[in-house]
Length: 61
Image (tube, rainbow, N blue to C red):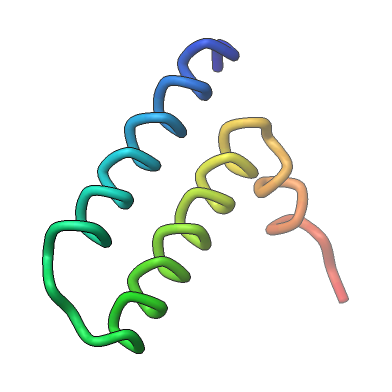
């Protein structure tokens, strides 16, 4: 995964989330849930992209 690709995706997602939070009227708790879901999905995407998520899946407890 190219670093420029990661940066562009983060910028686009951040701008879209900012636009949604700014211009679409929603209750505060719904905005918080939306922001948390987007952050969690981005973290999982980054972990998968850098190959860290596959090593966690293969780990035995």
